Length: 142
Image (tube, rainbow, N blue to C red; front, side):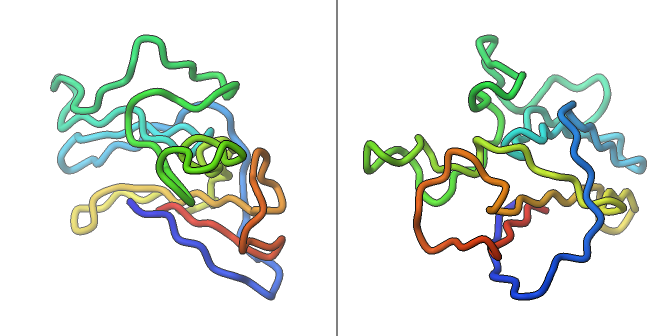
């Protein structure tokens, strides 16, 4: 999974839903599943089957209510890893925002596995710090 950013000069025609609860996607053919939190588009669990132990670490101290970044799992770190400048948020600002689910993007098929697309409009971003991103910039996480 990699975030990508594009500059859109035309209005976004995607239908979006805002959810604050975690979303679990299960691949029917293999029963593998992952859970993603809209806060930070953060993957917090992955299992190869319903009875398999979790593969990802999630700290027991992780706060999952959107008040701070989630500790553990697979975070989005953008535009930097760490905090090279004290005015930058630790590991970037994408993980400090609620992402919207692109409606109809969840999929589950034998050939491609299972997944979901999420999007963040930077005009809606909080805790961002200047840079080359304007209000017409969109970030996608698939």
